[in-house]
Length: 269
Length: 68
Image (cartoon, rainbow over all chains, first blue to last red; front, side, top):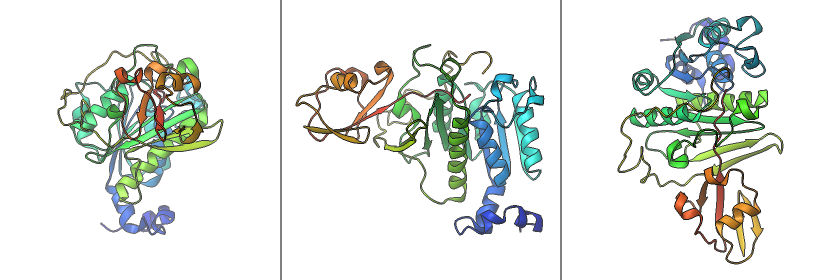
């Protein structure tokens, strides 16, 4: 379908890029991206994807907006406190770009529902705040052969990597299994600088956009780390041998998503 | 001998072990850090016994669970 005049104007700064063009913009308009977690990472990712004209954006989160979220979760405003995060997120995205269809999932994503949830999307963004969810998303994406962006943030640091089926290591290749309860501090316990979500969540949106338009190189096989205090970005090459991985390896022992005990960032995040 | 740690080349004593390097580098939460040496992930049970060699490239990959 041809772009409308309104779309040509709205997306003109994309269309003028040779890597995007009208063709790439149509790919974005036809794409479906799911964001799990409407928090520090999910907020900027969702806003940039909505602004970019990603045609269908799913957003999943069971929580309500809390006053302590607003220091970093810029998709929510003061008047949204108490609202489901997915509702607040949808309202912001629809105000930014009414041409985008937003699907909301006001629920905990778990082993029982994740495979069906991700199945209808082209790319998944992990914007969650705990290890059980990060392993759940990884395993489900491996099993459903879906590309996804992992990210984590804490204090003044952030990291991200991109998984594309068959093109490099998954999150579990690197991190094996969730750490024990309270072994690794969470952002609720340790704090996080608000703009960190903006930096890393925007990079997740960037990876989704590049995947959709099929241009550039993704962070497959790399972990990008960012230290805001030293202002250092590092693109760390990851070992390419995935054969021994419990989920994406040659002889997987994990053949269904697993619910690990939720042990971090409980209650209000 | 020289090894590369987190992208930085540095001189260390011959026969440096991985646990010694972890201490030298003040690696946080060493029990939960993923270590790769020369493009291979080290299994947890291999960390203690690993002796580094001249030219080794060591990376520490940290759990980062926040997103909230």
